[in-house]
Image (cartoon, rainbow, N blue to C red; front, side, top):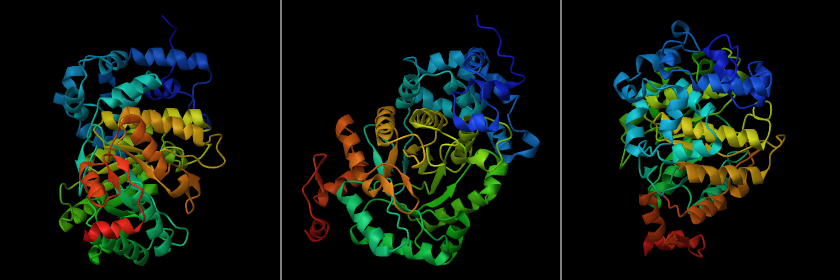
Length: 450
């Protein structure tokens, strides 16, 4: 038996058990050496899951995310695993008995800290296997997350919000069979007029060609509330979220504000096959960069963000895994591990997880690293990925995945788009039998009038 790690409390034990990453070292919470990390992982494996209900890493009295986690915990759902240790829980997750139905029933009983803890004692292949069993299905104008499906967000950002440049990028993505997750634009200018212009552009395109997808302009939630008051065609409300009240305050949000935005979007009744109207983005290091991590390791704080997301029944959640930079995830290996952890933890908590498989140009990573994470997440059952022209975002200035990357993953793993969107692609002669046709942009118009 390994000697004790000498961690003073559960929060430190969790931090020391985390696989090495730059942000935890920067914050001074990482294990001082590899031997301490291994001892902490052994000690964490022997820790009862129930302990996490009595020792929250951020105080209940001062943090609304902690209150949300503990006040909404479902003791009945937790009961089947309540007597297990973290290590025994890992064994259960990898067992034949832990099938899709069992894991779905368990989700409401698992806290983010439990999910984070078990991920710390799992290998990469453990994270992939366990996540691959879990399906979280959501719907708005098409149905996302079904087995055998991989969806793609078209991300047609433009450095000056030029409607012609945005439209060209959208068309490019549609002709690659992308866009079933959402057509989502990050505006260069977060303003009511800019958001209204871009929403109307996408709405006209979706209506004209009867595309079974949804639109989103990724402006601040308060901007979305204002454009909804003004009658703009809002499908999904976007917001970046984090795992502590202080970090969310840094983003200019609260749980009450997110609830107000969800109710406003629901009142528009724009969905046709479902009413999941929220889109959230997260990322390891966001709370640390806001000086709002409370001494908690990055991955545990990230998992707590999924409890925020879960409350609002979103259509889409994705970890923008390498976007914050090498100060937090230093290289391709750390990005790959973080992406697998985030995807697993989100799915275990019942959240419809996607991933922006990405890195900044000053990180020690390259597109080969992204190909590896892309493939691993495809095997793990990721709900959706990003599709950018040439895999480069010319407005945000980072590297992600491209439209043809989605085709690679669909072909390699036999995955297909969302069923409603797949039928539309075939009707418009963009694809046939899950193979892209040799089409020209005019095929869309031909499909419209055939």
